[in-house]
Structure formats: structure tokens, C-alpha cells
Image (cartoon, rainbow, N blue to C red; front, side, top):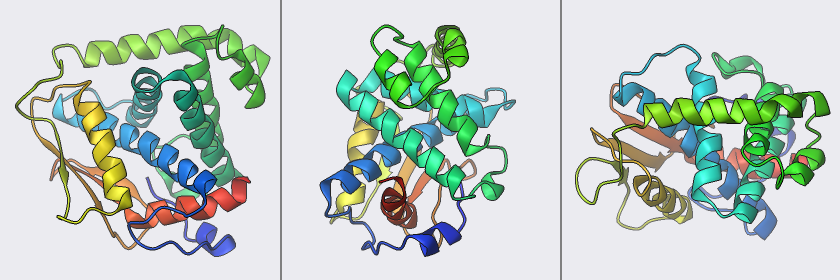
Length: 241
């Protein structure tokens, strides 16, 4: 996942590497998007480690993120994460930051897919959220079926991977003195390890990359969350307000 530098130029909000914004609302926005981004990259790691088919991998990773938000969080927190992630997709789209996404769907498409999958998992309880995020009524009709298909697909992919007390799993690679971002990602690593067992270890790190990015490196079996990406999200919050 890679973004254009122009967004940071449009709305500059300096943020120390490894820090979260002082403003509570901005910090919540950054935390929510980092969590959903990590889940997306974990989807890529699972596809690689399990040797699963690659067709539609980006959309599959997005579906995995939606599934994990639904599974791992209480309802109010899950809705907040979906809202913040969807707002980020829409803001990137409105800022014109579409070109470098490669195999990703356009951000506006990812916006509606996320809202649809999350709404479709509980259409009775999440109708107000779908309305607030302006999910079109015709699209809503297919969302329960889309959510069921995505959950079934990932349940099949995760078959035989129950959580383990010992053995391989996601492993946070972190300095002794953890900063705020690393502490946040550490909590998500623990949350995911409590949900999924892994046949091989996959490392996770938070580090400077020289660009606003987050990615899975299959050669190193490593997920990297760039500190510059967190800083860009903090700037993006000024765009969505």
C-alpha cells in the first residue's frame, strides 16, 4: 500500500516518528486505520504462508480486514474503526491519491466494499451506520450475501489454524523501549494471535521507511508498518474533519 507525497503537502501536521497525535480524536482515527491496515497486511501474509490462490488478492485482504474488525472488536469500537477506515478511503479518493495503488481497487470502491461487508454481517443492527456512510440502498440488498460469501471464503482459508499457546505466530520485532505506535501494533498482534494459529512465524515491525507505506514482504515473511504512514494518517484527519 503506497500513497502519494502530495497529500502530506496539502495538509501538513507534523508528528514525531513513533508518536500518536495529541488530539484524542486524531489519535483514535490513526489507531483505527493502523489496525485495519495491519489486518489487511495479515491477509496478504496468510495468503502467502498458506500458499493460497492469488487472484483478487487485494480484495481478499480487504475482506479479511473487514472480517477481523467484525470478529475482534465490541460493536461500538468495530463501528468506529469501520467509520474511520472508510473516511480515510474517501479522503484519499477525494485528494486524488489513486494512481500508485497498483492491484488495489480504487479507494472509493474500497470505501463501499468495506461498508457493505461490515453492514452485511449484521444488517439489522448496522443500518444506521450504512445510512450515515451513505451506502446506496440498491447496494445494501446484496451486502448480506457478499458478507456471507467473504466470511465463508476466509473461514475455509483459516481451517486448521486455531490459536496456539505455543509455536509459530505473528512476532513483533521491536526495540526495548517501545514507542506509542509499536505499543499499539503489539496489542493488535496479540489480538490476532488469539484468533489464528500459524504454521510459520511472520514478523511484524514498526519502522521508518522513507515513505508513507505499509506492506507485507513475502521474501522476509515480514509485515512492515512505516512510521511515515502513521504521520500521513494524522495529516489525513485534518482532511476528513
